[in-house]
Image (cartoon, rainbow, N blue to C red; front, side):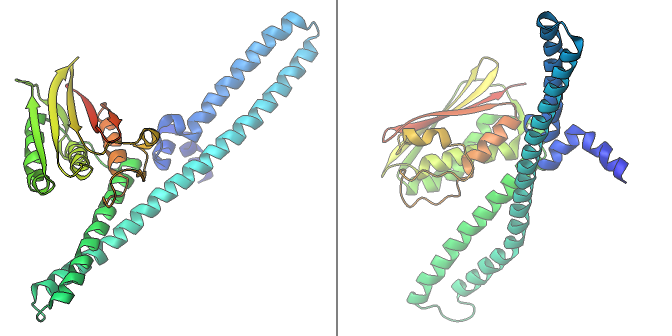
Length: 314
């Protein structure tokens, strides 16, 4: 049993998957790198020592002391990263379990609220209706948060499969614009799409790219001023497909821009009263990078924001 565990510990890829971290953050991979550094340091120490020190015994002693020191340092560093990786894994597992447990009660609350609002159990007076609507709205926000948490947990654990298929990104964008049309109209916002003719198809996961584009359109509308416009462009550029979405909303403060793709981050200086979990852009960036793409933005406070998404065509 112990021998099997020893063999499993040597499997770097399996350990990285266990902790849900990329290869360069995996403790076992770092230990291998540190081992190579120790070997390189010993070789360098031997050649330098042989030039300046005549006694081979002293050279050997220096190399032994250097090796012992580097092994202790590498072990401490690796153990520290291993503890951090384990804490991260437990945190993701906790979020996943709690989110799963919350789904059923929230669904039941939503169902019960709909029954009460329908009047099936008795007439609902005006004073009650207001509170029932507050309950329904807050329950919907909680369900959205749980959905976001589950999605992030799956992405971090690598449990969200990538089902690629050849699609027209222009069609996906048009369908999502139509979906957001009522929300945009209610927010006094117009959405315009300009697509380059004869754009090639891209091989991506439709559901996941929809999550990204939905997030960007939703944010553009929510963080609009009293009225405004959103311009979306699709172009072919250097063997890639470039999706651009520009708004003239409140913009992102300069001091917040370096945190915008961080998990749970929400700026305190943007438009007040906008609900959200701070997970949307983190999720979007994670998905795009899994597709070997790139996402970035330009923004100026009180002027607007432009997001760019670059996707490989092949």
